[in-house]
Image 1 (tube, rainbow, N blue to C red):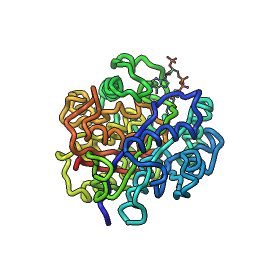
Image 2 (cartoon, rainbow, N blue to C red):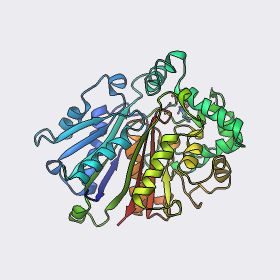
Image 3 (cartoon, rainbow, N blue to C red):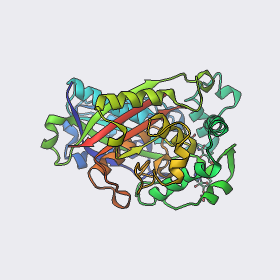
Length: 387
Ligand code: COA
């Protein structure tokens, strides 16, 4: 297997894009990534595009071909593949690109993610997202994603000493970070009271415990490490690429407050990279709901079960803390265009390692990205490091 490096990244602003079509969102992110990498479309061997549900959000299927066409890659007939694993589609697209380059099958590969969710109303969006859970056992019984994560939150709060305020602090911290991120959907600070006084969505989760519904796209370019310096002076090396699965329905889990697929993917990633937790300078975790960030920090092994609320309250996971979590603002403040989120996490880690993160910059040489599909039926974890 060959070592792989990221040589370029690009991302659209996340938010509501009334005047930009699905395909043009991708083209914008792709063009930024190619420009950053210093490669032309003709040099691209393959594309992997993460997308959860363009069929339901914008009534478009055959995304791989559409994207290759509008990115101007049809003339060189680059291989283009759609990758789907619900909200982990982006992370999985990155993993497919890394695998293709590592195997020697392809040399210059784009990994991207795109989703346009706001062309339908909230009800249709929420129902489409519910397709990432078990439709027969969960969706048909009325469970939405906020509802499923509310079950996790209730179970967790019953068993561990997490306070409502500690949970709210996750959102406060991520909004603080989002203020410094030009691509973030929400760039305003909030307080614990903002969260506690916002409307109840699924008890105990309130509006500000939830990631929003978002349009956006992100893209990165990967090549064999041995060729990376042909293109850039600051390649970022892929140190680990791990993936794990679990039961799709929450009620079949051993323990609904622990995402076992996160535990498994995290362990595999650390073993591949031959690193320990103290080597990681920052983590982008999948905070689709505030409780998800609490579980992710613990399930990745950064602290024992039941301790992440206290760490959050004490500022350990804030920008100036010992383990900055979601420096980008996370899904909460950046927004969560589901197919694009996993690539945006890689975009953030690369910017941090290159020292280009502006007001949210931390001391970063090694970063981890954690992307979850559904309530944890698919989990993808990557570790990247400076060269
Ligand atoms: N956090 C903070 N503010 C939010 C928000 C969020 N998550 N979602 C919407 N808002 C704001 C909007 O900006 C808007 O503000 P304004 O009135 O100042 O313009 C206001 O709240 C109403 O927005 P609207 O789009 O009508 O919200 P909604 O009620 O239709 O949707 C949720 C709110 C929580 C139901 C929706 O965001 C949601 O379902 N989120 C979860 C998405 C999800 O499940 N993703 C997959 C995870 S695995």
